[in-house]
Amino acid sequence: MDNEPILRVVFLRTELGREPVREWLKDLDQDDRKVIGEDIKLVQFRWPLGMPWVGKLEPDLWEVRSRLKGGRSARVFFTVQDGEMALLHGFIKKSQKAPAHDLELARQRRNLWLNR
Image (cartoon, rainbow, N blue to C red; front, side, top):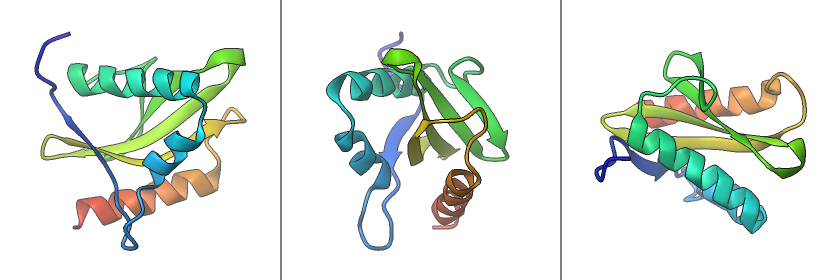
């Protein structure tokens, strides 16, 4: 990897000052946090990336795809603007398709970030 990141990673902060992705990561075990963090760093240093690491969901909304131990998967939704990779929402995947409420929450947070 190059020494300079292509994107600067930032956590979306809600109007109440919460950082949902940071809070979610803190609740995970150390091994899961490490895998997800390494995957985010890969995207940060090698943007733009495609499958299997990054999936584009819709305009200005992507997901970092992480494979965790035990055959589990995690997703971190993000948007990119002005050289920043804003982490919007994270969850452990339990089905093939992203749950509608997770996708809608990521859309709301993307719109909040892009219109700040």
